[in-house]
Length: 109
Length: 111
Image 1 (cartoon, rainbow over the protein chains, first blue to last red):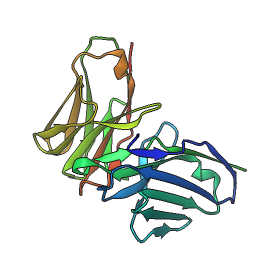
Image 2 (image 1 turned 180 degrees about the vertical axis):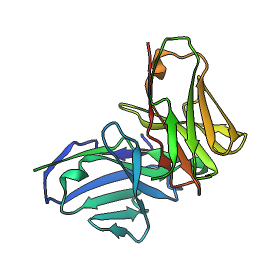
Image 3 (image 1 turned 30 degrees about the vertical axis):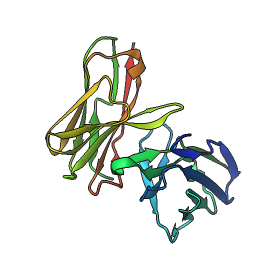
């Protein structure tokens, strides 16, 4: 079983749609959680950290369920510029980051 | 954007030759990391550094070595490149050991 699992997609959605990505992790000792965004042939960029109480940044909402070892990212009112691969990231042994393989999102006009 | 640069950005080399990739930061962050990214595997940690001259192995360290003689520079060396080391290499930095910021990447092709 992979340490961090994501649905690879692709998710094809129209502009203005709401889309949700899910992620599960295997290490119950993980303490920190993040979503990164990666555009084609570019470096990953930190989108947001994920806190136990859930957190929101504009159109983006992240949720964490420690009991189920599950993380989610909700994007509302999708824009063309949201098209990218979204990486779920958790801390592993020694605080090192463990990356999921990513979920590809394509927003169409 | 965090001040991280990588050089070279693209390189084609032959099997058996040594290759060194450079990561340079202007943020004075303590932690630096080298990852490789391949289809079907995602990002995998090669080596990391937690200070000058302090380095440790990641999950895919075989065939790679690193050095950090200054806070701002972290070098990744492939002693004898193999075709399996064809990949995109990303450097990352972190001030608090968790949130990491990535450089633009180096595309390496070993023929």
